[in-house]
Image 1 (cartoon, rainbow, N blue to C red):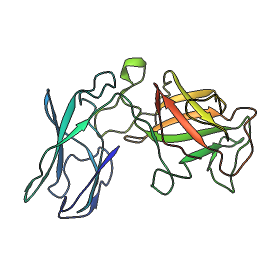
Image 2 (image 1 turned 120 degrees about the vertical axis):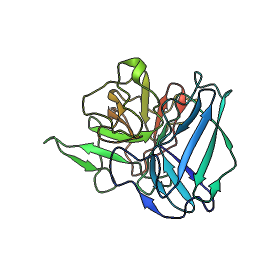
Image 3 (image 1 turned 180 degrees about the vertical axis):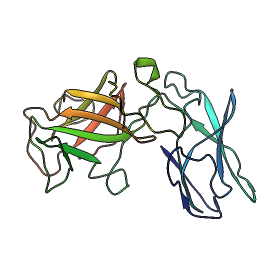
Length: 230
């Protein structure tokens, strides 16, 4: 998932009503152009100042190296924006947060003994040995590793798919580039079933994690660190 911010991006404010996501809403369309030609992006939401969309799966990315930009334009009933260069990588994880800011309380679900789930938070904490799901975006294409990449705008299926060599580190003393924090064993990495552009990782809270109300969590995905959450 990604967003475009600006002015006069759309004459209307509108959300997608369901799946598959539309490629045009209110006469608004987002188009990526790379060496393969023009590709339209599925739209979640359009408004005069913000557009939320799914980055098309066929956009060119070369091993995560930022050498090959694609260009993005917004087409509206009154005209087309200037093209903007966007650099595309294979992965770029970002943990979703409850307030939408990208900081603070992450979008996490606690696994309950009866098989249910609850939204993680100060009044619904976890302890070592518990399982938790974290929701993020930026997992990229997973079709090359046994996973299934649904068509653009279509939700991920409910068939379990395991991810690859990714890691999650929750720990009060976690610091990038140091030995702080504790590795968490993961059970699943992949697209969140029934969603578009949202990814999911299920992992066990490791033993030895310090207690606290603001224990930081970070994801490492193919060498790329996500934003700090808790």
